[in-house]
Image (tube, rainbow, N blue to C red; front, side, top):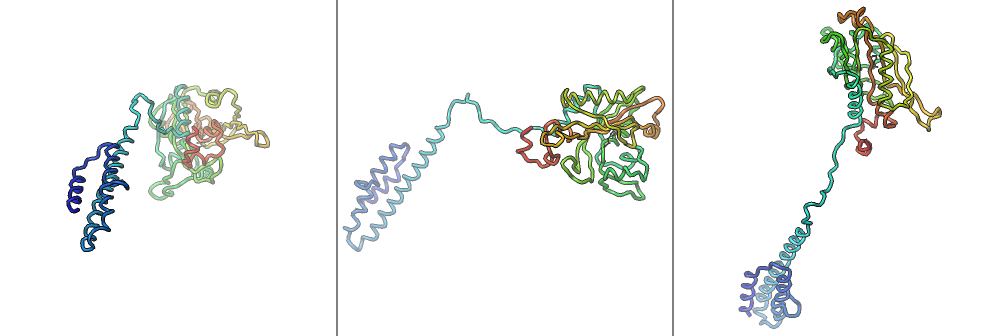
Length: 336
Ligand code: PHE
């Protein structure tokens, strides 16, 4: 009996199961209920002398555990090689697609606006978002106590003090007009896309930060008719030929005369079938602004405008609420 145990133990140590068939043979030879060799030994336990029975039983059970372990290990090993050989070997099959990112709809709209004005001969200029009071207000002809300073609902970083008259987040892109005119003599034809900040109450059409594209054209003989023509062309290009727009008189300290442009936002659920949405402010550069920068306001005239990128994106895509543009919800963003 002990011989049998040793013999089987030796065989198990030698065994090397490589295929499914070998695995089945191994299982039958040692573990099958009917004639498995280890099963046979188990059946013999009751016939062993009581004194040796326990030791014998333990040894047989050790063999059984080893053999069962080998079957389990071989089965897992063979199954996993089987699975990896299931992978299709046709390397010409199309791969699975990855989701790619897209530009944010604000960036896309900005690019579109910039492209249109580049075609009209404008170049792109840039300026800081952290601005001083002088560039944001004073140089643009806002008198010190002018209510327009409040009107802008400014985000001040440092209030006016002894050292300077205030550091703020720019409330519009117009201070870049001043920065450009300090560097460049007319003729000047620039646009300035950028971010602006306002400490104002948030609603479906206003947010505490948004984007503008400023425009400035200064040369001899530039007129209000040129401005009107440019803005008509722009609106038709960006919204389509059937756009309905109006030019509405307005006021800005740095332009005279001034006008705003509204676009008709068709909406059948609205009692009047839609509503006007203001997209830009504009006007003829006020001579006071030019004089303060030592530019001859008798010789040069110019127009300026500042448009809201978000408002234009809302009109183009029928986005009912500006806040959607700032929530980073992929279900919204991936529609563009
Ligand atoms: N800066 C003005 C605003 O933010 C817009 C504007 C720009 C008006 C240029 C006239 C000329 O509302």
